[in-house]
Image 1 (tube, rainbow, N blue to C red):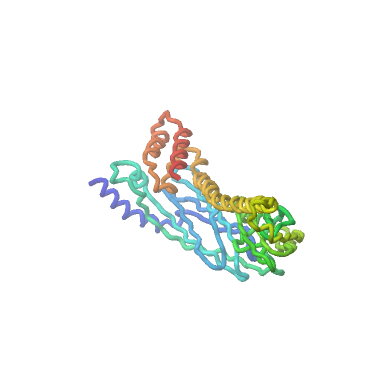
Image 2 (image 1 turned 60 degrees about the vertical axis):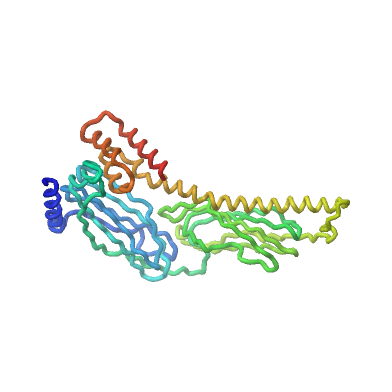
Length: 383
């Protein structure tokens, strides 16, 4: 009965305190540039600092979607400065997509809970184990306004990039394929629709894109992407000279990535070589050569296919490790308790929170580092 009364009193008094105290928290939304070109990387930061140290406080920030820009969360970090004293920093990467003045809006929520409400997440019977009961306050933020300028020249990419290529052979048969791979590396806007070879008259083109590396940074996406092409033709042809127009925001200049043209000689096969004559050694030579060439082309595309299939697994692993970064960087049992409560509420963390609570409040002899390692191991296995 006392516990129920306590909950009712909490729910009745917290809203009054929440709205009466205009100094509940201080927060600041900023950007590293007020003007930018289309597809130029823009960094947006939001810092929220707890001022009212009476209750446990959590900060949540979500960007609103818009066709005017692409936005991605780079990092969210919470720092404990003292008892009921936390600062949370959000960092976003934004790419403006339209040349006009754009407004970037966010939904900001402050969630407040008592120590009792937090404790009930991991204390008491199984029926009492649930997410924290909070009083939520939605705060209006002035949007970030960015003046987006049009590019002076038509470009294919925006950023700082380099291009290299590798052609397997310049002489093929009419039943073989010319295989060339272009490698694009650098940092900037990642255009999913960008391609290097679109069509060549008189040829059939098979293509594959593979991201060997792709990570969002405050300067844009750091990428290493391979464009692989297998080109089949009955007559000689030329893989045209590559000229990719790029704008570099870092250097404020336009430049061109180039690769020379490649002339491919196609040898026609004697029709008699295709006959199935058991006594003809020429037929055997042709079959072996054709098989070798076909296998070489097949291996290239198997390699590309496997890379495309394995990359999501590798990328998932990178995301998974980044997801647990806040746990890895925690420096105290109390800090880790709040991280688990705030960011891992769907995980079964009750046992670990109890152990951490013993370390923080009961001066248990158990090792904080060992418990943190066990948490990371379990989460890594489940993910």
